[in-house]
Image 1 (cartoon, helix red, strand yellow):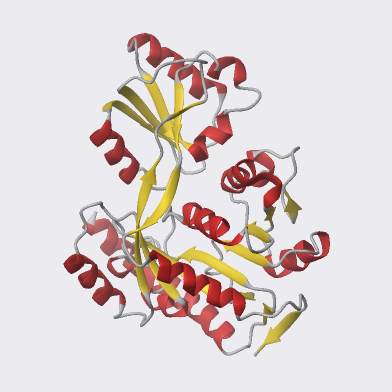
Image 2: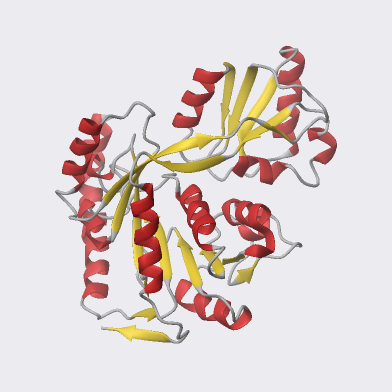
Amino acid sequence: MILLRILLFPFSVLYNIIAGLRNRLYDQGIRPSVKFEIPVINVGNLTVGGTGKTPMIEHLIRLLQSKYTVATLSRGYGRQTRGFRIATAADSPATLGDEPFQLFKKFGDSVTVAVGEDRAFAIPNILQEREGTEIILLDDAYQHRRVVPSLNILLSDYYRPFYEDHVLPAGRLRESRFGADRADVIVVTKCPMEISDEEMITIETAIRRYAEKPVFFTQIHYSYPVSFGRNQIAFSNDVILFTGIGNAGPLKMYVHQNFKLVEHLEFDDHHDYTERDLEQLQHLMKSHPGICFITTEKDMVKINREPFLHIIQELPLFYLSIETDFVKSGEDFDELILNAVRGNGKNTFPIPTS
């Protein structure tokens, strides 16, 4: 691994130069960007792969939806459509992408869920089609510099911190570690339950080498397994885990600690499930009588639909939903978000920034 990183290092240097030049063009106003007077809150990261953006978006929705009319905007990674789209009952993971579809299934019409590659184009469309929109939450737009957010939230995975990583392709960073300085607040996600104050101070010190910003720490709270397969099936402690997410490590650890983990089928992130995948589960069920299958909510919404219903109704399937829990100072984080929202006006016209 170390040898491969050394071999790839020259390409990382080139990638870093290109990414740095792009950022400088935006910083100096040579490449145009727009700022909207409606509050726009971005949740993003420096790395490729999962850092817990969707649970953070869900936390923000729960915080804001009782007070404001909220819309979410994602690129819609992995979808088979292109361009701007607002979610409707006719949509699916294929038309929206799995994470926007999950948000739509969970929150329904109480939140506008939209996708669009060009956020600067998509935001005015949201405001035109949903005139009452008061806040827009951007999912994974930290490198999308065409839009200047009101608040930039940077997430860093506890197990894969950006300050120990390297730029692609030698590492997982999309840009230099110093890109963290564009954030208004940094959240370290997926922290272990036993994290100490001393360790949090050490992590915060490492982060402050690159960005002097407020730092918060969160953990994943898992729900009790929820059945969505065969009706009236009792949950068994013997489980097979299957996942199609960016970093299944924390989930696998949780399942191993709380249940008897027999096997883990690990698919690529944003895996497009097929009938053959579910037939594989059928074969495993025959080999392990009394077994239950556990997956994520993100994976569940992709298979709990036609054309798979005839198979999943025969399988003991369960999913775990997750929420973001702050280790401490969660009230301070929420107040920071609310203050950022209160600081914005209601004009929906984009303002060019220099």
